[in-house]
Image 1 (cartoon, rainbow, N blue to C red):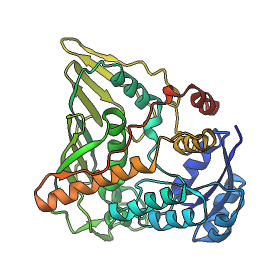
Image 2: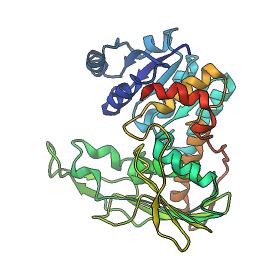
Image 3: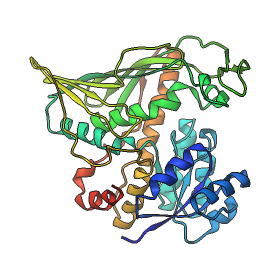
Length: 369
């Protein structure tokens, strides 16, 4: 398959993970890097042997077909629109945007121009999550009836050297971590139909516990503990809690319950792990993970799938429609908490097809192993 030219805008910490993983996907040809801070692009380019350019020159490069947008969440839509205006396909880090209406402009503009939008997270394409998907599709759970999704920690200011953005608009535990959990649940159960959410009043300031700013106070602009429930179009109801205010807990990241048994799903922020299944009247047993991409950090697989999809003229899995749906669901938690009402979800993306449904694609991507 002819490689697809890739440009990257945004050379912060996450760019290194993408660049390392991209080396393993022959369909991805990284042509150039850019950043609003030229020195950041030059440093990352020197590290990986890739030319650094201005944003304008990168967008004008005819050898680049997809631009990977690794800017901060508040800039995702603005930069995404610039990518589309340049005639390139856009793939971005999560979330798709920080405002549903704004992000919908991005997907609508892509459709108008005949271009594609893709978005992280792509961890649901990892071996553990694809194994869980296969297990659900095979009917072992019976009719799905419920589940739980939990991420709770004391807050990132304990360790992050510059944690302010986690507590500004566009941050918070729901927009930061929610995409992994909700995307994986849509992969397993299909789209969400309505949301109920609650959130206590957050602490308005938090002290930084890491160097070099230890002791400085951060102003908090977003909810830091969000809980509620998602009802899926298939009727299943999943409880969810995302928090930066919990010292510790013993909940598993993801569980899905059905009429015939219960399934635990590994951390959706990672590609690997072992799902466990409890059949009614039985004992917990491991679900065999025979699918690829379970033994490392494959951040870039969603981009590789999108590149392959362009060449094969088929839908890509980590799609803009899926990311827009996830953003609408996350935003609905806040709307529900404010109004006290259940929020109906408008978007209904197609459930991503499993990697195993496309043997030719699996063969292409398995070259990364």
